[in-house]
Length: 513
Image (cartoon, rainbow, N blue to C red; front, side, top):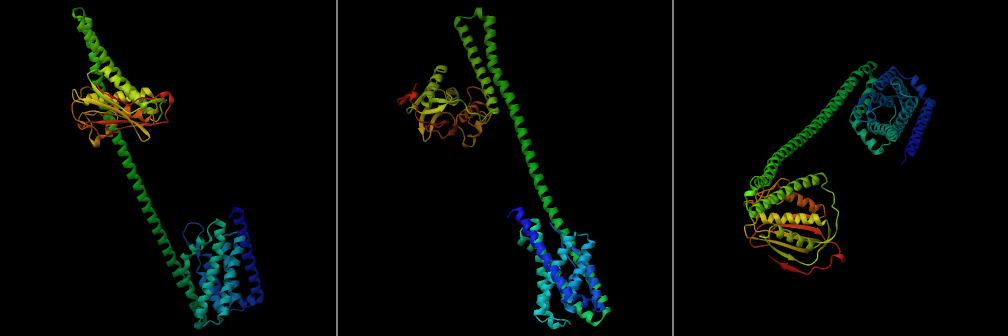
């Protein structure tokens, strides 16, 4: 339903209720209601005064949305209906309603609507009472008829008000009607006092003067109950809010502790890095400087063979120093842009595995490497990055393998991936440490691999290797070794692509050295 249609429905209902109620009021006045009221005894006018006071000072229930009101005038309204009939009761009720609305400074349209809907409610109650034989003077035999008439008065009154309120708020009519359940009990108490008031009026006007006392007691007691309920609800809301705040504070405390732990870990890593880098860089640098110093100071005394050995030593240490620096720079770059994909082109993973093996053989002819290739494995990758990963893995395998042990290199297709595996015969990697060794600045000996390292490092090789693999859409994992001698098995996985003609075909090969 659109906003315009809601407004149109609201207007139609308000105008219809107002017109119907005012017409009924005029009809009751012309049918003798005014004359009956003027001829009524003093008890009638006392009830009118009490009714007006109840309309001026209703009990307001604290709640969300429009306030719900309970007027003690209900007792005197129904007492007037029982004692003097519909016409005088309706006129007195409208007079009290207008008085209360004027005191509350309500707008004229609301004043007219309230008067009209109360008249309709009173008319419906009077019609039910008359149909069931209820006529003045009141007797106890009319109690069932009165109970039904009072129920009709309550239902019509609340329905008309709540429907209009729901339309004005663009809310659910049924939900708004359901909100009126909170006034059922106090209204029932006020209704039950109406027959008592009529009986007192029939006996003596003086007894009517005593009615305000219990009504004031009911008014104050119910107001106190309402305030207590409001205070309880406020206290419960405060408890809930306090729990929420406490939970949030606990969450923030945990977050702060986590940040503190991360900062402590970062500081530890920085300290370890500084110590490791200082040591690892100092060692090759000392080798380079020592070899150069020896050649400079005693070069003329050394044999050509010794001079060549010192030059080779300086070259080896310089290469090691360069590799360490390159690892640090590459790790810093990957840390800044870890998700950036490397430029790729169609290559044969088997061919790259063969190239990496040849590079290792050239750098360390003493290291035995067994190669097992299973045809061409077309992938899209960055060749230099793949070679760097494989060279890193082969170097690590050589470091951790016993003297004279053979390193295995194999390449095969497995599902949608080309798998290049490097397996050594070293102490292996414990299952619990297979993810930790890929963290920055973690070295295999620190991760629990066991054994004695044959060379140093800053613990960035495997971190860099995995980042490079993932930057090409692949991954680097530690798997269970295939060889009977145990050891560590690292598998580089790269996504296979449709075979590209430029790659050619590589025949299955195996070999060793």
